[in-house]
View 1 (cartoon, rainbow, N blue to C red):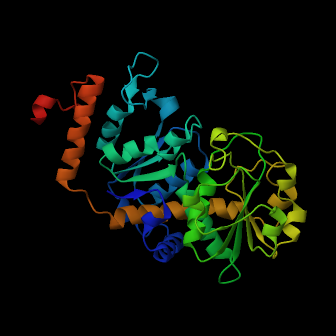
View 2: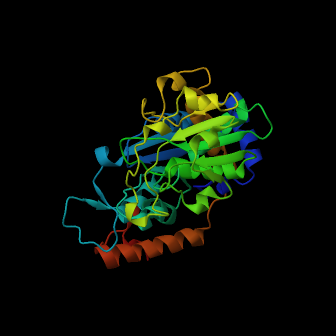
View 3: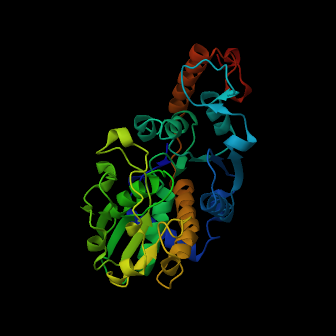
Length: 358
């Protein structure tokens, strides 16, 4: 079953970029791939760019689109296993997921970190249940730890605007009043390590990203030193990842405004382009002067969210291998057991009883 979570899931990255640019230049050429297919987009959290770009990309490829706002237009869902459902949750995710899988051909899910447990967040409990029980391809529209669609768009933007074969790209922590997830910086680091760039990460002490994402990047605690000679500056806030300070996971450790990207910071770069995933907290992570300058690629970057999503959908629909019937049957059998043993359910998903199944 195909899953899009990390850069490796695309296979040959150069080929994926070529395909994305091909789709960008002719966005309607693959409509036959999406004909009579339905994309289900599930949002556990609010969204602007992800929601709009994903919907439009699916429609450009001729797909039908269903959007489900879990916390607004559906039952409240219980996500923990083995619980007694005597609270305000009307349905368990283990019941809802296979039902959702009955109504679509592929599923996109957006679910943020809770910061209640680093272990739970980094194990991607919610997204992995969709992968395991939906029986359909699943792509991450942002999760507790990664935002691959944003990073794919970022890489596309860098490829379009780079002025050297191997540009210097700097990911810089920036201040923010709230505790934000590490999904964007984690993915950005992962994708830049896979790309042909000179990659540097800069942040205050205590904000070290998980090594599995940082990879071979050079980490520099002196922000201005990191900016020297840079071709691209990517500003993003993130809360404490809990790598060097486990007890502070998800907390704001620093509000040092000297890390705000301003004209003085940009002056030490190689006339660098400025990038930000948006929304930017102006005056905190970046000044108006930089965000609105000719060097800013924020809107081109946002526009490439559509390019990235179109490319991904072509990948899912053109190259997808259908799972074997045995694998689907095994997954459903396991789910039936969980539903009966843990939740006391007697009805299977999609309106088929166990007696009928046997």
